[in-house]
Amino acid sequence: MIAVLGRVDQVARAEASVLISGESGTGKELVARRIHAKSRRAAGPFVALNCAALPESLLESELFGHEKGAFSGAVAQRKGKFEQAAHGTLLLDEIGEMDLRLQAKLLRAIQEREIDRLGGKHPVRVDVRILAATNRDLMAEVRAGRFREDLYFRLDVVRLRLPPLRERRGDILPLAQVFAARFAGVNGLPLRPFSAQAASALQVYNWPGNVREMENAMHRAVLMADGPEIGLDAIDLASPDLARGQTVRPSSENRPATQKATPFASDGIAALVGRSMEEVERDLILGTLAHCLGNRTRAAEVLGISIRALRNKLQDYRAIGLPVTAAPGYAAMGQ
Image (cartoon, rainbow, N blue to C red; front, side):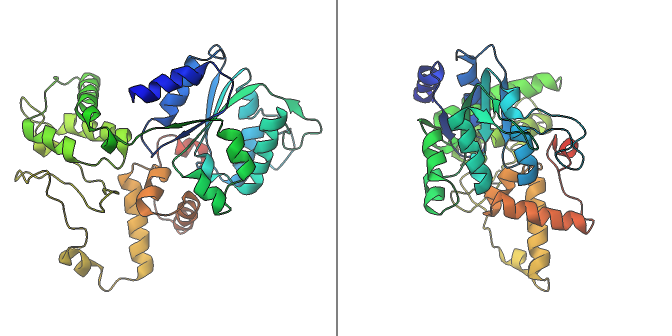
């Protein structure tokens, strides 16, 4: 990470586009904010847009803005993210989820430094530095025909890869201690050290959700801890381990942290017998979304499906009246 941050500081003062890759939860937006803060545009705005959070029709308006009357509900002119980020930095998060048609418009905006608002009659000049982030292999997406090659090379002037937490195990305990101290202070609780067993469990776990998962796990641990230490009982590491397809779940019986739960135990299969595939799929999707605290990108990764496929399923479930867990901020966007 020191090497990564050194490269971040090296390219920050340039005007080149930067492609930040890494798994969900590795801190891609934090790196983007550091680039902006150390750039010559630091006095300007930093604007971030999650390209996976909005359907194509809304995403285009969010990017480029619209004129009054451009579509039903457009009661006033609205500036898009390109104009909001004028003289600053625009981060396009989850760029790999953008539709091909919209990719073409984005490429033109980057090349020509001008945009067309929806319903607009004249192009609008923009001055903005573009940063893009993705948890996908964009070159593989190019080969599969899901991402434009010309846009890829336009974005990939400088490439930064953020390593997952399992590749930087020396950072695990220091990060856990930082989060434990933060949440102890927020909740008015005493700062407690980790027991030896709890520390061991943290270090051997593969952290598929990376630093974001650790942050949530440490918040739970601080709240659940009882006694002078944060013990094994307070450490709930129940997220699916993507690297091994298994789960680490320390229990009150002090099960060794290296012991893995069997993902297809016989009693688990027995509970599925007699149910339709549709019902099982629905419960799996909704349960995974709830476990990921409404984070659709993370849930799609765990399920092994695209964010578009997940979004379509959730729309179907909502249409029949099923409750769908929303991440903070989603309700306000109507998602």
